[in-house]
Image (cartoon, rainbow, N blue to C red; front, top):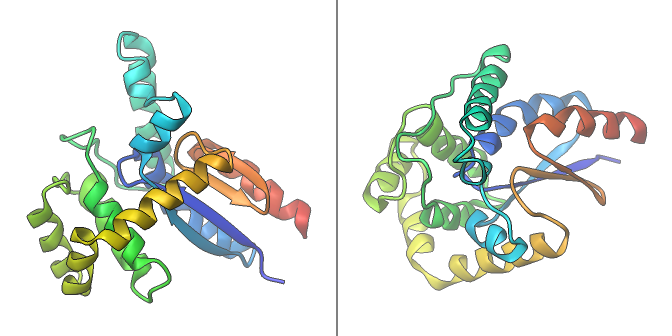
Length: 201
């Protein structure tokens, strides 16, 4: 039976970006399929009385410097391109509604790659709807469908519902990954996700 891994994410998280880059190879090694679960991180934080580590440790220069160093080190050692967004923190509500519209579609992976890369590789301001539309067009994605979803009520409500459901499952931040009922948090938990797959074989 094919094992699934659920990837709970918001584009605003640099750690989610890095985990997303590594996860496909990990899943392929174990014949696992990835199910993407878009949520709105700001709502998760509010519901769980949590906050971004960059905000939580903003007055601790050493801790803040370490967090940034850890991101770049993770990327460098895996041959990934990563630049801290000049617009961080970003409002990703439009992009995440687009992610909801992409769920289960043949182009879901291309949409996710396009938006993550726009933020963390190219430094684009994706909370600007016109910029986001340009990104979608450049990747030859269905612009009209995505634009309608972003500005409509269905994707907005679905995103709210999925975020609430994730919180009920124990999610307090992103990236969060589920293998069965086991939850793993953060990019540095990917090694434990792999161990979980190995234990299931």
